[in-house]
Image: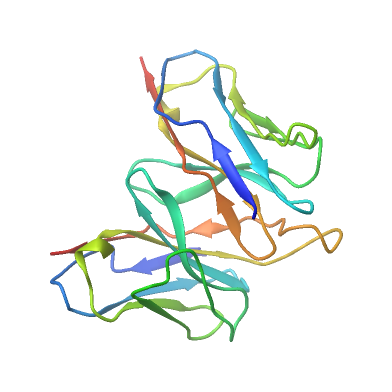
Length: 110
Length: 121
């Protein structure tokens, strides 16, 4: 069945460091791909998405490119801030529901 | 436009008690979902309703029941709470809009509520 695998955390970085969180997927058909972010004590909110191969989603300095050839959707940011500390979830869209990865906790220190 | 709302925000139950978690959305979405989130486990789908009048089991449906009361509301019921049901529960909704070929998945954004923190003693 469809699945999402993302790197285990926590990922610990200093402010202004470069961020990569890896996400790979297995799917039949042509799913859409999403990154959601969960700040402490809150629900999940959409960070960015891409609906077809080679699309790049971007928001708040974060980017991810839908790579069909490597079945990947890695999340990147050039310079992280303390306020980016959160849990990040990669997800793919099946026929009627999202399939989530297990989440990666990011901790950014000043 | 309140988005997805959940009540209550916090709840403490004793083993064997029952309760209903309420969820409502004001975005005219077709599909609604209930998840639970446990430390180190990510999100697990309990039940979902792809459209008004339908409900389906997710990964972890045992011990729960749901009702899609109307297009806006989707409730989750614990008939006899157990300590293993201590968790944070999230409701979510989406339009259920699909583009492209039949093989294409849903393309629309899923919106989440703020969560209900449930403790079963």
